[in-house]
Length: 120
Image 1: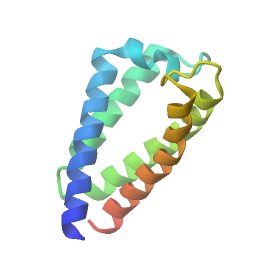
Image 2: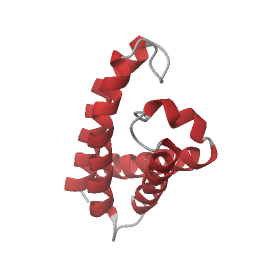
Image 3: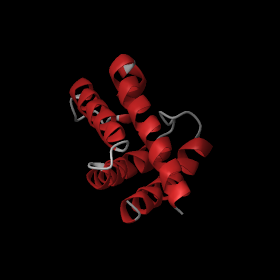
Image 4: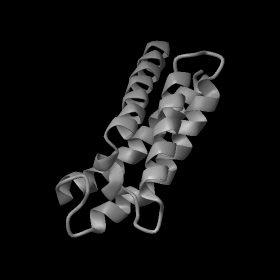
């Protein structure tokens, strides 16, 4: 189990750091994921920084539990956005199929962060 948790920590750390960096260097990619009533650029940068910091914190034993909770909360916040995206005529993620696959995937990612949390 420890090998699996270590793998998940590293995988999520890399993915969240990468996603955070992408928010900062390619903000236009994410603008269609953000509802129009929100300040798109500000929201994009805030979540990019949060994703990077949380991803980085997954690499350190002293911050792993807080980072896992933070990642779980981010994934929970993103869930309604993924559902909203799937209901759009032209989803920001691309195809309707991918948009709908992403919803159960979100629950799997949330479960993985739970595994990281309880085993760290």
